[in-house]
Image (tube, rainbow, N blue to C red; front, side, top):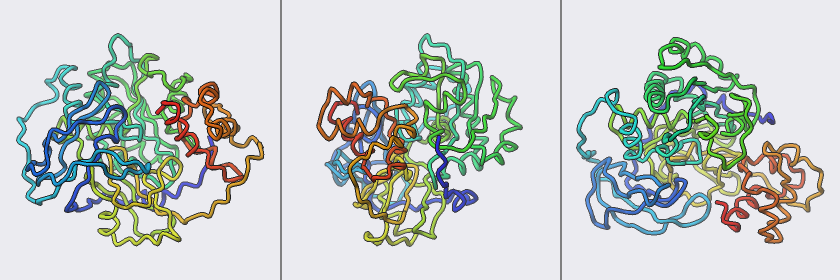
Length: 424
């Protein structure tokens, strides 16, 4: 773990506000982990708010719903944060808020399978960044779940969306936790938060004995990337799992607080995954806060609404966190189910040099990899070496690049290396 200045004080105490809806939504069909969703609407078709517009495209995939009523103006390839272009449904908002009708239900009467199916129907994916379809995670089969970890360890600098969610919607979160406990039957529940957020403890303490199983609060010492799933499991249970191993097979399930809030919205308010909470912040803007925003909202609309200008020669705009996020030049890119933040940071001039093999990246790597050797293997397009050096174990935390004195673009090498070796 490495201490990195947080910058969180700019937004920690800000109440969640709502970004008004845009006139056009750009809803990507392949931001979640797994196969892209398949459109079930056509150009020119009118749609209602909450209506299914694309269905899961395979065993590992997730449904996509309309965030507003209006009509479909295009289905085509549009820019993504990683620079690629992927199939996107464009919806013209009619601002009438005409909703898809639903039959009211009481989640407390649901069977475990009905809860899981409702999560799948709502298109809920992991809100912590990986965006793995949540209904798959909760199908534990014969695995006995000993520990259910609620991930409130928002360790990336500047981001406070999860903190604000826990502070303002703790009761709703715990309703979702209780529901999931009835499904996966864990022996214990652990809420993991950063020690710097210890003021959350008295907020959750009244609920410690109210769940079907005991809830304990784990206060994590400062350090990045403690919010990463594997590091969190190690902190909470002492187990060290390799990347690629399904935690449930080791008796653990981890869910981000944003995911659990989406489950509450789906089961108790009958709202599919059409919005999320993001942080807008950075060291190059005084306009900042935590905001509810609809999935598919272009970054340009958010910036314009908040009155933020982005001089490209001075400001680096990042979608996500500064360590694992994507630098974005095209502001038509939109918010996805996994977008945690929009950051405006001072543009730093990088002057990459040859690797001096100082070993700082090796010391920093939480997965005990050899980043400089991986970078060399990628430069040589050596697929076998990338696999032998365990590139698949890289969690893309960015620490190696953060400590590199030679400004070697390590993270981009690893992302491209995974594409090269079909590991992504």
